[in-house]
Image (cartoon, rainbow, N blue to C red; front, side, top):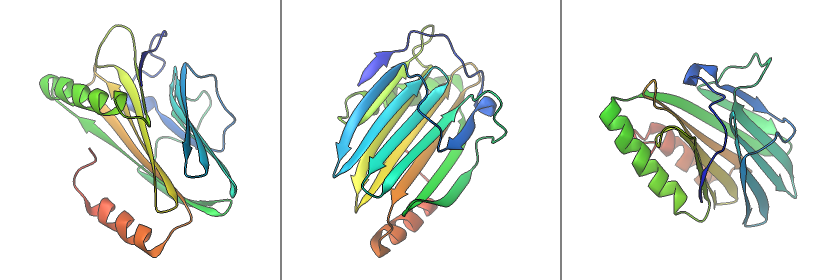
Length: 185
């Protein structure tokens, strides 16, 4: 689903993003409710970036990546921790692209997410390449989501990847392979 977010930028650059786990739901400009094999997932676009709310029989999980007033936790490169009965893994990276490469990458990501049944993308007014996009799926008993936060004024694209679930041996092997993969798509 693709939407226009009726708000000005709240984030000013990739460096302003912070990460938080376990926050209460924040006001959202757009949401997408999903049911993924017994897991209820809500993708939320904020004026300040994104929030994901996950609810399952084992518990709940809330991830926020945004400009968070008073936050002292900057966007980490990686986090692995226990949340209720789940393992939570988060990874982030910042790409710096030339203007031409940035525009092409933005169009590619928006096309991928906006046509996907588990995707939500919001474009900010003023630039077709200023957006936040989210894509979720369920695989081997785990919920995965990816996000992209675009800052065309700086040529920066922040990509995050999250996995929450009870790990299986196959999932651990797949995660190790994905961590060695050069492509974040």
